[in-house]
Image (cartoon, rainbow, N blue to C red):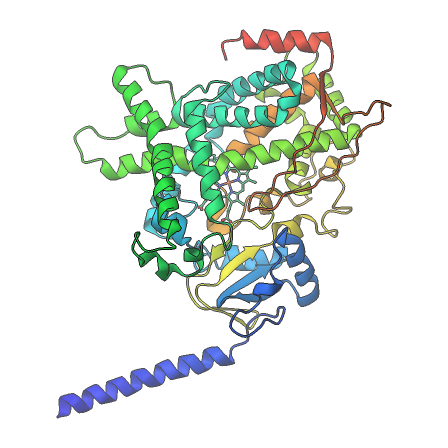
Length: 513
Ligand code: HEM
């Protein structure tokens, strides 16, 4: 009897605690935001396109922390430097999770990419291994690869200038494949690049909101494959095959070349060579495999998008282009191409690279984080499981920090004497994401961009196309929708600056790079 009484007593206390917590939650105030409808919340307020602009308007109206609810899912949009620092940096132990996609994480198995992994020990181990090879002090190891690939780019621009968007993709694919696996990619239809591009392209399509109901209603994943209306199973099986190939093919090639004694130096080769011979290395090998594939998956589209922004900015701002070229002519001279030893003497080029990431941030809403516990911020309640966006676009277009934010103006980062002004907030703070999940590839990307920007500007003039009357086409930055937002395809005229530039390009291909 006393056992039953004890049980009832403990159960009632437990129930009281649950009820108290429930009532407390109901009383707690969520941050302000547009009023939604019953059950579906703000689904009808959600813009289909360029969400960052609508979110920016909401931040101006409701404040720098805005709450919306989409089909029962809480979402928070942070629209100021202060709110972003408070949440992602100061409360990083709570706000470093990643929302899960049932299709990508659970059915396709894409969480080998630690970008998509939940926060925790496994993520930490993968990120640590990645960091060793991509941290600031490590990325100069790949200088010869960045330079080799940007020299190839110059050659491709000389031969087929109108294909510049494709050539930029090819250049960065070569840079990543070279550094991660020691693979030299072929100029057309490289098998490793084709597999990776197909896997990434198709994976990005399944994350489009509304593309697969199973993402919104994860329980549907348990419906058997034979049941009508379960096309998602078929798509997932196809994508899993592509994803496995992207993960395994280049990795197995490195293993084979190590066995044959023909391996080129690479991150994967270094990771494999460091494994002790007489131990069970299954976990370490898996991590080594994920490092290269995660770099390609997270790094290729982003840096390529930034290169497209570069070409567009140069075609739109001839004055900026001229000033950058004058600096290169002055520091590097006409008899060689720029390299990394010049970088510290090129403040305008460095300012231009900063301005690229500020002017049109190519991940304008960052990647969403997820809160891992209930929390309170400025008296507002943020429930566990809330999806949190830092609106990078708002931060980088804040006119108080960056006057005339829509204008491409590298000199905003310079002192009157032409040196870099470190008091202006570095756009890298926002462009590469936040807190513990900040982009670990940012130094690699920066070095590669420097190599591309300086080499192209030293040798080519980039202009808008002209019509038959010689009038230049009007260009403007039309950014496409998506987590990674590229400029819409555009044309421009790319011509060598001189015959000496042509000779330099041809000569550089004979180097031992
Ligand atoms: C212009 C180029 C790039 C931009 C703008 C960019 C931006 C970003 C952003 C916004 C995030 C999300 C951070 C967050 O969750 O708050 C991210 C994550 C990541 N980036 Fe980059 N990135 C670039 C290039 C690269 C490159 C070249 C690599 C690889 C070599 C790379 C590897 C990664 C990885 C692995 C993550 C996931 C980190 C994690 O979840 O812990 N990124 N990047």
